Length: 118
Length: 140
Ligand SMILES: Nc1ncnc2c1ncn2[C@@H]1O[C@H](COP(=O)(O)OP(=O)(O)OP(=O)(O)O)[C@@H](O)[C@H]1O
Ligand SMILES: [Mg+2]
Image (tube, rainbow over all chains, first blue to last red):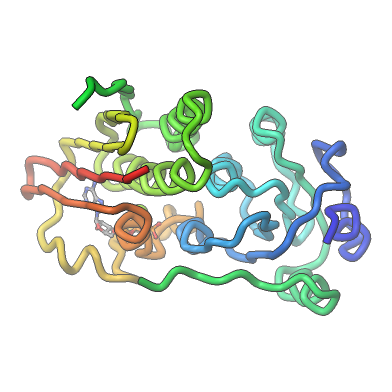
């Protein structure tokens, strides 16, 4: 699914890296716990989260995640936006809550990834 | 064996905002050195978890990364409170992180298990009241 489609499905606003909108993502992960995100292995994922601190951006960078969606209308601060820009990570923000945002993407064919278990 | 490229960082324990910066820098260096993306990701995730642990549980410390052509060693040393029961700390879901840390997105008790999962070798040396050193190796 293209990031532009995620934007449309979630009626989201693009905060930075608009040039990545035509990038494809293959799976999604929704969590407010960064170690849960880091236990997740799929390539080309989008991260949905209600947290807006710099560690969210660094966690995404560690995982090679190219797009983060902030749910519940969360707006990142300027320093968080700058960090995302420097790492070329697209940031979207939606008024939807986590459950609904994930549900909409799943219903439209974006699958969850797997978690390494051993 | 050839001499490794050594990367060293001070991890600031006072400032949570900067937590993870050393891991970001290592990732960048390994990319520039041309390592395969999968190896880089494993090193990055394992080091990032360990770096965050030093900040939230041990008031910071020192990170050393030894880069060999065929393996990468990560050594994270702190002078924090130490870990009394290492096998308990290694269990998924075990965490002593307080609520303010949880609200920042950490404290799921998944960091040490993730570090083990993503590395080929991991060893913890810890003494209560003295500090903790975590040694990890990722084979390229
Ligand atoms: N460097 C350290 N110094 C002292 N205690 C530590 C250190 N690293 C880990 N611990 C202890 O081990 C526990 C488990 O660590 P682990 O990284 O698995 O989980 P966490 O940091 O609490 O949460 P998460 O990593 O999921 O955000 C910690 O809660 C803490 O009690
Ligand atoms: Mg941890």
